[in-house]
Length: 481
Image 1: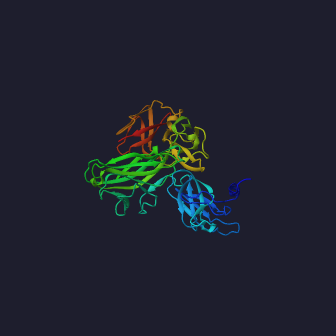
Image 2: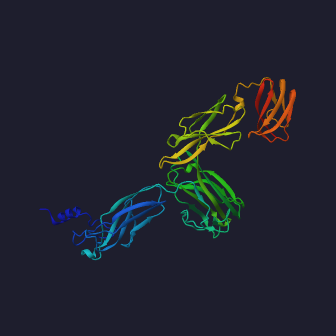
């Protein structure tokens, strides 16, 4: 016959929630092994930026009442105790400043076993959970910090190892306020880091990243022994990117740093102050922090022209663009390089495009650029359009039907005078700017040569339209002063 002890153990595992291992140092052996220690109900969680928010309900007996002896809850992350909630009525918990990743939480109810015949002893229920939290930071790029809130808490700035001489000064900045590290009181052989919230750069798989910030140094020794370093934190620790030594006073200095090395699933902007003796400086000040991605555009953009047809071609961005670039847009402007219109109704998914120019146009200058359309494949949302360099197409140069007919225009580029020579009599000429305006015109009186004075003509690109007995000739010329 099985022993009573063996039978009790079988009953223990048959019940839905029973006495189990307590927190360290507590006994869980009750007088009556059939007394059930019910676990918390409806244990669940969600994320708020870099924080896991966990909530639950009190344990309940089958009749809907709270079990006797409930005194609190033990919360575990990845099987490690992170908190004891010493109040049976506290039904939530914030787990702050988590790193990017997946976390598993369990929760047990803690009971005073006095109510179960074991005075002075405590027992814990079977665990509720696990609750799985996928922390993909909800703090997207770009990231801005101008300190306008007057607090380090607004962007969850924290300090390693402590805040020490850092503060917010509402009367100083570019413009005020700004974050300031004071040299006084004295710190010897110090190393203090200031870091922001965890940011999510996962969507930007085909981009470069940049950090802009302003800094100011009020120096004392100018010895180069005290340093301000910009860098970042990830799950492998601190990574310096740009270092500034104390080598004399500065006004407000703007820095733009390539921060692409920080690209990853979870990063934190950081600034480190370090040195031999902080009294060598009066203060470092930091303002206008901006971390932002710049998507990569198409490469090898080029064009060819055959009469009124412009053939545009390009290559994919120099990254794994198949994952993110969903197509391309084509933009064109006539005469001026700043009034562009999109030509395609839907994204172009090939690497070429044919543009048919207006049939009656014989002299315009056209500008083109092509953009890569980037999408966040995780959320299927638009990220950005990234362009290639602007291309210029001189329509008149590509229309073969209009030959030179013995006409020479020189010099090109021109500075003072532009001279036109012809083997046949010239009737008239017009100089046209890129907006289509006639800036100079002349009737030659059937001469074979004339000159246009350029002193009053602004530098730029122009079309000269020349009329002689054989027709109209168009040439592109450049004026340079």
